[in-house]
Amino acid sequence: MIIRAEHDLTQTVGMRGYRCSDGRPLRFQFTDGSYTLPTPPFSDYQMQQVLGQTDVALHPTTPGGDHSGYALFSSQGQWAITLERSGTVVGLVRLDVRTAATR
Image (cartoon, rainbow, N blue to C red):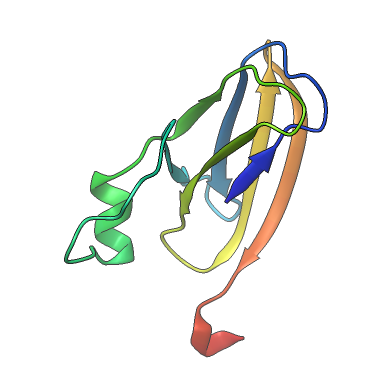
């Protein structure tokens, strides 16, 4: 996923996510540079258990600056991702994640 700043981002914004049905944390893999998944690739379940972090800090950037990485969904279902600044939610997106077979 790519997160692009539309305006100056002068403070760090925290990002976290969860599965709506039970609150299971979503894991993210974000780096300042590029990131390549391990070879051979882990199953989705293994990725959730060993990779990523549950909280991501999106550091200040200028308009048009990007933060890029992966959201590592462990299952299909509804998920939410929140953005927080100084303890206040400033953004929320809900996603309906499906496997290729259920589209």
